[in-house]
Length: 292
Length: 236
Image (cartoon, rainbow over all chains, first blue to last red; front, side, top):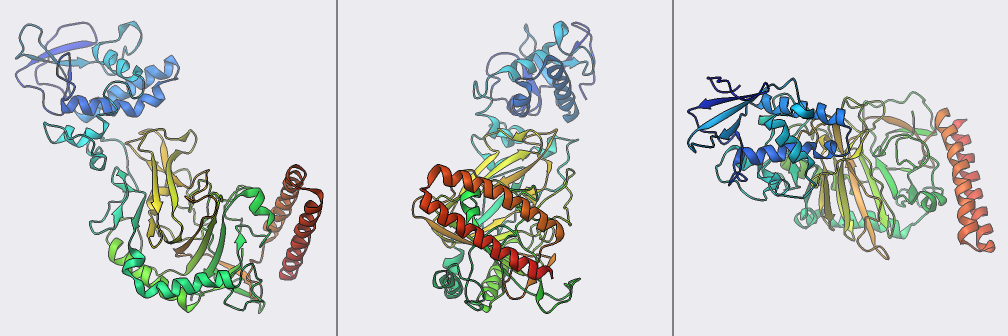
């Protein structure tokens, strides 16, 4: 993954290779002075930010394993660590490390030391959080853009992680909510009703039924009334609202072809079962689907 | 739960929403908008009522859709027409074992105003490796919150017409509109009643005067007895 020439210097874990090439935007520079905004370093800090929570409060063994994993990940992306020659500012050295051995403890080399130092930073301290939104800049432009949370595109840099069910937003979608990894949680069209005035009468006639026939048994109000009921198979126990502090719902369902019931009876009908499953059947207190 | 027939008015609203959704989200991969809606759930929010964090669909630990535990068709979204007072919906990225993801982008809050169409992405509820937040563990988005969702917590009232495509049929009493419970559900029901009863007793003893308490207790019992009778009739 590293340079073509592998020179030999330093200790067992560190090898510095003198390279005629300068570090690219993807590479990470170790050293002092004006390197904060180097795109590779920005990527590096934000990459480590993902591990910060886990690193804090972990045991020493876990920290060592995590360091090892982080270094393997960076190794896998094809990025290199560069360090500038102390005597000649035009000379760069590629820092080579043994990514599998001697991480942690007293034998820590320069890269793992840097990683652990960044991970040990308190949250919000320094500039790692501020630059976490600059990932697009780190990959394409030499001048990173600040505060653009919509422009994350990390997947191309992560060869082994899988994103099996990520959807991409449509260009013509309504207001797409803030997303990361191209995964919107929802879309909201604020002007839907304003742009579809034809259904306003139908909407209000449906809602009006609630006020005209509140809490009435379906038999009493024919097909027009709506019985406000708690989300429970028990029907309408008012006490549930006090105890569970949950919300009320009412289902309208359409008979569909192809749906057959196992029990044929004139007293029952077969409807699509709609609950909005919630947390699933976990007993009392859930909003979930009762068992079938 | 009470089920009501699909009215013409609801059909017209559903058609309008469906056409809108098809035009806007027709090409989005991962979201199936090919089936018209066959279910509308009217959600009511009043005052301090709370919608706890939840997912609409259930997935197994590997992120596969559990067909036997969901009524909704796989990959179909939930589309809610928001009515009434504005309310807040909060999304939180959650790991299955280690709880909420603490990253500041792992929490999203949106205000739903009257007349808005809210479209829930079915993909966001599916457990997956979301590498930006956690490269090692699967996570998924939950929605809801532990505080009241309505902005006006005193006199606020809001509704939501939630349109879905449901594929699981259930027996429903033609007269009452209530579900015909299975044997297991009936047992669960009895257990819930027992738990509820205890909680209610505590509530009454703590907060209410004895006269009100007795009245409420009677009301609760009669309501449950009535319901039990209906269920027994259904079972027969």
